[in-house]
Image (cartoon, rainbow, N blue to C red; front, side):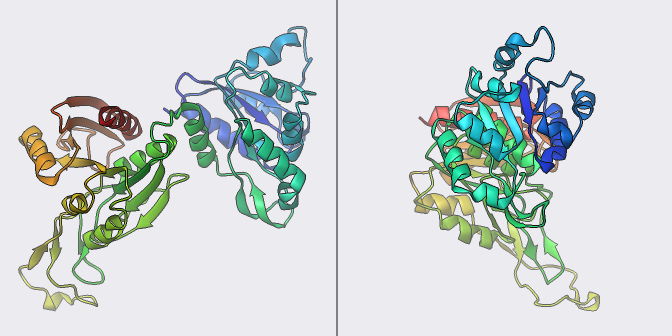
Length: 397
Protein backbone atom coordinates (compact mmCIF):
# COMPACT_ATOMS: atom_id res chain seq x y z
CA UNK A 1 0.00 0.00 0.00
CA UNK A 2 1.33 3.41 -0.99
CA UNK A 3 0.53 5.22 2.27
CA UNK A 4 0.80 2.45 4.84
CA UNK A 5 0.99 3.95 8.36
CA UNK A 6 0.95 7.51 6.97
CA UNK A 7 -1.13 10.12 8.79
CA UNK A 8 -2.42 12.60 6.23
CA UNK A 9 -4.44 15.79 6.32
CA UNK A 10 -6.77 16.25 3.37
CA UNK A 11 -7.82 19.86 2.94
CA UNK A 12 -11.01 20.52 0.97
CA UNK A 13 -11.77 24.06 -0.17
CA UNK A 14 -14.70 25.81 -1.82
CA UNK A 15 -14.66 24.56 -5.39
CA UNK A 16 -17.39 22.77 -7.30
CA UNK A 17 -14.85 19.96 -7.57
CA UNK A 18 -15.10 19.37 -3.81
CA UNK A 19 -17.42 16.43 -4.45
CA UNK A 20 -14.51 14.59 -6.13
CA UNK A 21 -12.64 14.65 -2.83
CA UNK A 22 -14.92 11.90 -1.53
CA UNK A 23 -13.48 9.43 -4.05
CA UNK A 24 -9.99 10.77 -3.33
CA UNK A 25 -10.54 10.08 0.37
CA UNK A 26 -11.56 6.49 -0.37
CA UNK A 27 -8.51 5.95 -2.58
CA UNK A 28 -6.13 7.32 0.06
CA UNK A 29 -7.67 5.04 2.69
CA UNK A 30 -7.45 2.02 0.34
CA UNK A 31 -3.72 2.74 0.07
CA UNK A 32 -3.34 2.50 3.85
CA UNK A 33 -3.52 6.18 4.85
CA UNK A 34 -5.06 7.51 8.05
CA UNK A 35 -6.94 10.53 6.70
CA UNK A 36 -8.03 13.58 8.69
CA UNK A 37 -10.27 15.84 6.60
CA UNK A 38 -10.24 19.60 7.20
CA UNK A 39 -12.77 21.68 5.25
CA UNK A 40 -12.97 25.40 4.66
CA UNK A 41 -16.33 26.99 5.40
CA UNK A 42 -16.86 27.53 1.68
CA UNK A 43 -16.32 23.82 1.00
CA UNK A 44 -19.30 22.89 3.21
CA UNK A 45 -21.58 24.58 0.65
CA UNK A 46 -20.54 21.99 -1.95
CA UNK A 47 -20.31 18.78 0.10
CA UNK A 48 -21.23 17.99 3.69
CA UNK A 49 -18.77 17.12 6.47
CA UNK A 50 -20.93 14.06 7.14
CA UNK A 51 -19.75 12.53 3.87
CA UNK A 52 -16.11 12.63 4.96
CA UNK A 53 -16.99 11.61 8.52
CA UNK A 54 -18.65 8.49 7.11
CA UNK A 55 -15.69 7.66 4.88
CA UNK A 56 -12.94 8.24 7.47
CA UNK A 57 -14.73 7.46 10.72
CA UNK A 58 -13.24 10.67 12.11
CA UNK A 59 -14.58 14.05 13.07
CA UNK A 60 -14.25 16.54 10.22
CA UNK A 61 -12.85 19.91 11.26
CA UNK A 62 -14.33 23.03 9.70
CA UNK A 63 -13.63 25.80 12.20
CA UNK A 64 -10.56 27.18 13.95
CA UNK A 65 -12.20 27.47 17.37
CA UNK A 66 -14.94 24.86 17.33
CA UNK A 67 -14.41 23.70 20.94
CA UNK A 68 -12.26 24.26 24.00
CA UNK A 69 -9.54 21.92 22.71
CA UNK A 70 -9.12 23.76 19.43
CA UNK A 71 -6.38 26.18 20.53
CA UNK A 72 -3.45 24.07 19.35
CA UNK A 73 -5.26 21.85 16.86
CA UNK A 74 -3.47 23.47 13.94
CA UNK A 75 -0.13 22.62 15.59
CA UNK A 76 -1.04 18.97 16.16
CA UNK A 77 -2.43 18.50 12.66
CA UNK A 78 0.64 20.24 11.26
CA UNK A 79 2.64 17.21 12.44
CA UNK A 80 0.98 15.01 9.80
CA UNK A 81 3.19 13.04 7.44
CA UNK A 82 1.74 15.04 4.58
CA UNK A 83 -0.90 17.66 3.81
CA UNK A 84 -2.85 17.47 0.55
CA UNK A 85 -5.26 20.22 -0.49
CA UNK A 86 -7.64 18.94 -3.17
CA UNK A 87 -9.33 20.87 -4.54
CA UNK A 88 -7.23 23.96 -3.88
CA UNK A 89 -8.88 27.25 -4.81
CA UNK A 90 -7.15 30.42 -6.01
CA UNK A 91 -8.14 32.01 -2.69
CA UNK A 92 -6.45 29.36 -0.55
CA UNK A 93 -3.32 29.42 -2.73
CA UNK A 94 -3.14 33.22 -2.48
CA UNK A 95 -3.49 33.21 1.30
CA UNK A 96 -0.79 30.59 1.82
CA UNK A 97 1.54 32.36 -0.63
CA UNK A 98 1.21 35.51 1.46
CA UNK A 99 1.51 33.86 4.86
CA UNK A 100 -2.11 34.46 5.84
CA UNK A 101 -3.54 31.95 8.33
CA UNK A 102 -7.10 33.13 8.90
CA UNK A 103 -8.77 29.71 9.08
CA UNK A 104 -7.89 26.24 10.37
CA UNK A 105 -6.64 24.82 7.06
CA UNK A 106 -4.30 27.69 6.21
CA UNK A 107 -2.99 27.65 9.80
CA UNK A 108 -2.27 23.91 9.55
CA UNK A 109 -0.34 24.46 6.32
CA UNK A 110 1.80 27.20 7.86
CA UNK A 111 2.38 25.03 10.94
CA UNK A 112 3.44 21.99 8.90
CA UNK A 113 6.59 20.57 10.45
CA UNK A 114 7.91 18.47 7.57
CA UNK A 115 6.95 20.86 4.77
CA UNK A 116 5.26 18.10 2.77
CA UNK A 117 2.34 20.11 1.43
CA UNK A 118 0.79 19.57 -2.00
CA UNK A 119 -1.97 21.47 -3.79
CA UNK A 120 -4.27 20.10 -6.50
CA UNK A 121 -5.82 23.27 -7.97
CA UNK A 122 -9.36 23.40 -9.36
CA UNK A 123 -10.86 26.64 -10.67
CA UNK A 124 -12.06 28.47 -13.75
CA UNK A 125 -9.49 28.69 -16.55
CA UNK A 126 -9.35 32.48 -16.34
CA UNK A 127 -8.74 32.37 -12.61
CA UNK A 128 -6.03 29.75 -13.08
CA UNK A 129 -4.30 31.68 -15.87
CA UNK A 130 -4.57 35.01 -14.09
CA UNK A 131 -1.03 36.40 -13.60
CA UNK A 132 -1.69 36.86 -9.89
CA UNK A 133 -2.60 33.18 -9.43
CA UNK A 134 0.38 32.07 -11.49
CA UNK A 135 2.66 34.33 -9.47
CA UNK A 136 1.36 32.80 -6.23
CA UNK A 137 1.82 29.26 -7.57
CA UNK A 138 5.37 30.05 -8.70
CA UNK A 139 6.20 31.56 -5.31
CA UNK A 140 5.00 28.44 -3.49
CA UNK A 141 6.82 26.10 -5.87
CA UNK A 142 10.02 28.06 -5.34
CA UNK A 143 9.99 27.40 -1.61
CA UNK A 144 9.24 23.70 -1.99
CA UNK A 145 5.48 23.25 -2.12
CA UNK A 146 4.25 20.71 -4.69
CA UNK A 147 1.50 21.28 -7.25
CA UNK A 148 -0.45 18.50 -8.98
CA UNK A 149 -1.35 20.19 -12.21
CA UNK A 150 -5.04 20.51 -13.19
CA UNK A 151 -6.45 18.90 -16.31
CA UNK A 152 -7.66 20.62 -19.44
CA UNK A 153 -11.22 20.24 -20.69
CA UNK A 154 -14.77 21.42 -20.16
CA UNK A 155 -15.23 23.16 -16.82
CA UNK A 156 -18.33 23.25 -14.62
CA UNK A 157 -19.24 26.72 -15.90
CA UNK A 158 -19.08 25.54 -19.51
CA UNK A 159 -15.75 27.19 -20.32
CA UNK A 160 -12.97 25.18 -21.95
CA UNK A 161 -9.41 25.21 -20.67
CA UNK A 162 -7.08 24.25 -17.84
CA UNK A 163 -8.62 24.15 -14.38
CA UNK A 164 -10.26 20.76 -13.85
CA UNK A 165 -9.16 18.86 -10.77
CA UNK A 166 -6.69 16.13 -11.74
CA UNK A 167 -7.95 12.56 -11.74
CA UNK A 168 -8.06 10.97 -8.30
CA UNK A 169 -5.59 8.22 -9.24
CA UNK A 170 -3.13 10.79 -10.58
CA UNK A 171 -3.39 12.83 -7.38
CA UNK A 172 -2.75 9.73 -5.25
CA UNK A 173 0.26 8.75 -7.36
CA UNK A 174 1.79 12.23 -7.48
CA UNK A 175 1.32 12.74 -3.75
CA UNK A 176 2.91 9.36 -3.04
CA UNK A 177 5.94 10.33 -5.13
CA UNK A 178 6.20 13.59 -3.24
CA UNK A 179 6.07 11.97 0.20
CA UNK A 180 8.16 8.89 -0.44
CA UNK A 181 10.49 9.61 -3.33
CA UNK A 182 14.17 9.77 -2.39
CA UNK A 183 15.37 11.16 -5.73
CA UNK A 184 17.54 8.07 -6.21
CA UNK A 185 17.35 8.62 -9.97
CA UNK A 186 17.26 12.41 -10.08
CA UNK A 187 18.73 13.66 -13.34
CA UNK A 188 18.89 10.15 -14.83
CA UNK A 189 17.38 8.93 -18.10
CA UNK A 190 15.57 5.66 -17.60
CA UNK A 191 14.05 3.43 -20.28
CA UNK A 192 11.63 0.65 -19.33
CA UNK A 193 10.22 -1.93 -21.71
CA UNK A 194 6.98 -3.63 -20.75
CA UNK A 195 4.26 -5.98 -21.88
CA UNK A 196 4.22 -8.61 -24.61
CA UNK A 197 4.98 -8.23 -28.29
CA UNK A 198 2.63 -9.52 -30.98
CA UNK A 199 3.96 -11.25 -34.08
CA UNK A 200 1.21 -11.23 -36.69
CA UNK A 201 0.44 -14.09 -39.07
CA UNK A 202 -2.22 -11.98 -40.80
CA UNK A 203 -4.35 -8.97 -39.92
CA UNK A 204 -6.21 -10.96 -37.24
CA UNK A 205 -4.02 -13.74 -35.87
CA UNK A 206 -0.76 -13.35 -33.96
CA UNK A 207 1.75 -15.18 -31.77
CA UNK A 208 2.18 -13.66 -28.30
CA UNK A 209 2.48 -14.53 -24.61
CA UNK A 210 0.77 -14.00 -21.26
CA UNK A 211 2.62 -10.87 -20.15
CA UNK A 212 0.28 -8.21 -18.70
CA UNK A 213 2.93 -5.48 -18.52
CA UNK A 214 2.28 -4.91 -14.80
CA UNK A 215 5.91 -5.37 -13.73
CA UNK A 216 7.23 -2.96 -16.34
CA UNK A 217 4.61 -0.33 -15.58
CA UNK A 218 5.40 -0.64 -11.87
CA UNK A 219 9.08 -0.05 -12.63
CA UNK A 220 8.26 3.00 -14.76
CA UNK A 221 6.12 4.37 -11.94
CA UNK A 222 8.83 3.86 -9.34
CA UNK A 223 11.56 5.31 -11.55
CA UNK A 224 9.47 8.44 -12.00
CA UNK A 225 8.90 8.58 -8.25
CA UNK A 226 12.66 8.58 -7.79
CA UNK A 227 13.09 11.61 -10.02
CA UNK A 228 14.09 10.01 -13.34
CA UNK A 229 13.08 11.11 -16.81
CA UNK A 230 11.26 7.93 -17.83
CA UNK A 231 10.46 6.51 -21.25
CA UNK A 232 8.19 3.47 -21.29
CA UNK A 233 8.28 1.36 -24.46
CA UNK A 234 5.24 -0.85 -24.20
CA UNK A 235 3.66 -3.66 -26.12
CA UNK A 236 -0.15 -4.01 -26.05
CA UNK A 237 -1.59 -3.81 -22.51
CA UNK A 238 -4.73 -2.58 -20.76
CA UNK A 239 -2.74 -0.45 -18.30
CA UNK A 240 -2.80 3.32 -17.86
CA UNK A 241 0.38 5.27 -18.51
CA UNK A 242 1.94 6.32 -15.18
CA UNK A 243 1.83 10.09 -14.53
CA UNK A 244 4.89 11.93 -15.80
CA UNK A 245 6.06 9.01 -17.95
CA UNK A 246 6.54 9.22 -21.73
CA UNK A 247 4.99 6.16 -23.36
CA UNK A 248 5.82 4.72 -26.78
CA UNK A 249 3.38 2.04 -27.95
CA UNK A 250 4.63 -0.78 -30.15
CA UNK A 251 3.33 -4.12 -31.39
CA UNK A 252 6.13 -6.38 -32.64
CA UNK A 253 9.62 -7.20 -31.40
CA UNK A 254 11.14 -5.35 -34.34
CA UNK A 255 9.07 -2.25 -33.60
CA UNK A 256 10.22 -2.40 -29.98
CA UNK A 257 13.82 -2.79 -31.11
CA UNK A 258 13.56 0.25 -33.41
CA UNK A 259 12.20 2.41 -30.58
CA UNK A 260 14.70 1.05 -28.08
CA UNK A 261 17.72 1.70 -30.30
CA UNK A 262 16.82 5.40 -30.49
CA UNK A 263 17.82 5.63 -26.81
CA UNK A 264 21.12 3.74 -27.08
CA UNK A 265 23.90 6.07 -25.99
CA UNK A 266 21.73 8.39 -23.90
CA UNK A 267 20.29 6.02 -21.31
CA UNK A 268 21.52 5.69 -17.74
CA UNK A 269 19.33 2.70 -16.79
CA UNK A 270 17.45 0.21 -18.96
CA UNK A 271 14.93 -2.10 -17.29
CA UNK A 272 14.14 -4.74 -19.90
CA UNK A 273 10.89 -6.03 -18.40
CA UNK A 274 9.06 -6.70 -21.69
CA UNK A 275 8.28 -10.30 -22.61
CA UNK A 276 9.60 -10.03 -26.15
CA UNK A 277 8.25 -12.87 -28.26
CA UNK A 278 11.20 -14.98 -29.48
CA UNK A 279 9.56 -16.19 -32.68
CA UNK A 280 7.51 -14.72 -35.49
CA UNK A 281 5.81 -16.10 -38.62
CA UNK A 282 8.19 -15.98 -41.56
CA UNK A 283 5.53 -14.26 -43.63
CA UNK A 284 2.66 -11.95 -42.77
CA UNK A 285 -0.45 -11.93 -44.91
CA UNK A 286 -1.92 -8.49 -45.48
CA UNK A 287 -5.48 -9.78 -45.11
CA UNK A 288 -7.14 -12.52 -43.09
CA UNK A 289 -6.07 -15.97 -44.25
CA UNK A 290 -9.08 -18.11 -45.05
CA UNK A 291 -9.46 -21.27 -42.99
CA UNK A 292 -9.34 -23.34 -46.16
CA UNK A 293 -5.95 -21.81 -46.97
CA UNK A 294 -4.34 -22.46 -43.58
CA UNK A 295 -1.44 -24.89 -43.62
CA UNK A 296 -0.88 -27.69 -41.14
CA UNK A 297 2.50 -26.25 -40.18
CA UNK A 298 3.78 -22.73 -39.63
CA UNK A 299 7.12 -21.52 -40.87
CA UNK A 300 8.75 -19.24 -38.30
CA UNK A 301 11.80 -17.03 -37.87
CA UNK A 302 13.72 -16.02 -34.76
CA UNK A 303 13.31 -12.44 -33.58
CA UNK A 304 16.36 -10.26 -32.86
CA UNK A 305 17.88 -10.20 -29.37
CA UNK A 306 16.90 -6.68 -28.31
CA UNK A 307 18.94 -6.36 -25.14
CA UNK A 308 22.08 -7.86 -26.69
CA UNK A 309 21.81 -5.49 -29.65
CA UNK A 310 21.26 -2.55 -27.32
CA UNK A 311 24.40 -3.44 -25.36
CA UNK A 312 26.45 -3.52 -28.55
CA UNK A 313 25.47 0.09 -29.23
CA UNK A 314 25.59 1.30 -25.60
CA UNK A 315 28.39 0.09 -23.36
CA UNK A 316 27.68 2.58 -20.55
CA UNK A 317 24.05 2.04 -19.61
CA UNK A 318 23.22 -0.08 -16.58
CA UNK A 319 20.99 -2.83 -17.98
CA UNK A 320 18.63 -4.89 -15.85
CA UNK A 321 17.22 -7.90 -17.68
CA UNK A 322 14.38 -10.20 -16.67
CA UNK A 323 14.48 -13.96 -16.86
CA UNK A 324 11.41 -16.20 -16.82
CA UNK A 325 12.70 -19.69 -16.11
CA UNK A 326 11.27 -22.86 -14.59
CA UNK A 327 13.93 -25.56 -14.19
CA UNK A 328 17.48 -24.58 -13.27
CA UNK A 329 16.36 -20.97 -13.30
CA UNK A 330 19.28 -19.71 -11.26
CA UNK A 331 21.98 -21.05 -13.59
CA UNK A 332 20.06 -20.14 -16.75
CA UNK A 333 19.54 -16.59 -15.54
CA UNK A 334 23.20 -16.09 -14.67
CA UNK A 335 24.20 -17.44 -18.10
CA UNK A 336 21.77 -15.00 -19.71
CA UNK A 337 23.30 -12.12 -17.77
CA UNK A 338 26.80 -13.03 -18.99
CA UNK A 339 25.85 -13.75 -22.60
CA UNK A 340 23.83 -10.58 -23.09
CA UNK A 341 26.15 -8.20 -21.26
CA UNK A 342 23.68 -7.41 -18.47
CA UNK A 343 24.61 -5.72 -15.22
CA UNK A 344 21.74 -7.41 -13.37
CA UNK A 345 19.17 -10.06 -14.13
CA UNK A 346 15.92 -10.58 -12.23
CA UNK A 347 14.67 -14.17 -12.23
CA UNK A 348 11.10 -15.16 -11.48
CA UNK A 349 9.53 -18.62 -11.69
CA UNK A 350 5.94 -18.37 -12.99
CA UNK A 351 5.16 -21.92 -11.88
CA UNK A 352 4.82 -20.53 -8.35
CA UNK A 353 1.41 -19.25 -7.32
CA UNK A 354 1.08 -15.47 -7.55
CA UNK A 355 4.38 -15.01 -9.39
CA UNK A 356 5.06 -13.67 -12.87
CA UNK A 357 2.63 -13.41 -15.76
CA UNK A 358 -0.73 -11.67 -15.20
CA UNK A 359 -0.31 -11.62 -11.42
CA UNK A 360 -0.43 -8.50 -9.25
CA UNK A 361 2.41 -9.93 -7.16
CA UNK A 362 5.87 -11.21 -7.92
CA UNK A 363 8.82 -12.95 -6.30
CA UNK A 364 12.28 -12.22 -7.64
CA UNK A 365 15.86 -13.31 -7.25
CA UNK A 366 18.21 -10.59 -8.47
CA UNK A 367 21.71 -11.49 -9.65
CA UNK A 368 24.45 -8.89 -10.17
CA UNK A 369 27.46 -9.29 -12.44
CA UNK A 370 29.73 -8.82 -9.39
CA UNK A 371 28.35 -12.09 -7.97
CA UNK A 372 25.90 -10.61 -5.48
CA UNK A 373 22.48 -12.19 -5.06
CA UNK A 374 19.36 -10.59 -3.60
CA UNK A 375 16.07 -12.23 -2.68
CA UNK A 376 12.78 -10.29 -2.88
CA UNK A 377 9.97 -12.31 -1.24
CA UNK A 378 6.52 -12.35 -2.80
CA UNK A 379 4.95 -8.91 -2.67
CA UNK A 380 2.90 -6.56 -4.86
CA UNK A 381 4.76 -5.74 -8.06
CA UNK A 382 4.88 -2.09 -7.03
CA UNK A 383 6.78 -3.07 -3.88
CA UNK A 384 9.08 -5.37 -5.87
CA UNK A 385 9.80 -2.50 -8.28
CA UNK A 386 10.67 -0.20 -5.37
CA UNK A 387 13.07 -2.73 -3.84
CA UNK A 388 14.58 -3.60 -7.19
CA UNK A 389 15.33 0.00 -8.19
CA UNK A 390 16.80 0.84 -4.81
CA UNK A 391 19.06 -2.23 -4.87
CA UNK A 392 20.21 -1.63 -8.46
CA UNK A 393 21.02 2.02 -7.82
CA UNK A 394 22.92 1.27 -4.61
CA UNK A 395 24.88 -1.58 -6.18
CA UNK A 396 25.62 0.39 -9.35
CA UNK A 397 27.13 3.40 -7.54
